[in-house]
Amino acid sequence: MNVIAKYLLILLGTISLAFGIVGVFLPLLPTTPFLLLAAACYARSSEKFYNWLLNNRLFGNYIKNYRSGMGIPVKVKISSLALLWLTILSTIIFFIVTIWVKLLVLFIAIMVSYHILSIKTKET
Image (cartoon, rainbow, N blue to C red):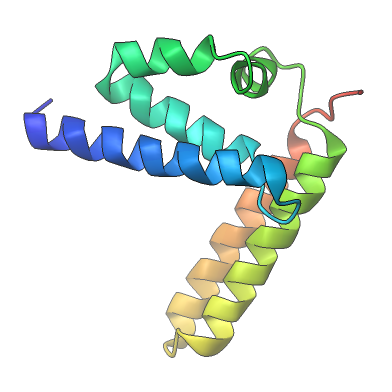
């Protein structure tokens, strides 16, 4: 991996982590998807950041529960789906003019929703 790609992944992971942290305090912003994205970016770019995130006492459990198949809490599923559809529908309505692009974005949202719903719900 070249140096630019490595630093871009670290930057994307850090931005995603920041959104995940904000999501802990704002119920509309999902935490787990942003933490999973951060973990994926860090895993591909920095072993140090990846290990720090997995072993972090505040965020490590979100990622470990997902990766181990224990699932995600129902609150996280609901907030993830609500945010997903709010952003997708507003994007389709206000920003995309081409019908095939609207359909493509809608299809992606449906597939992401299916994935979120197919993840085991963690009992709290």
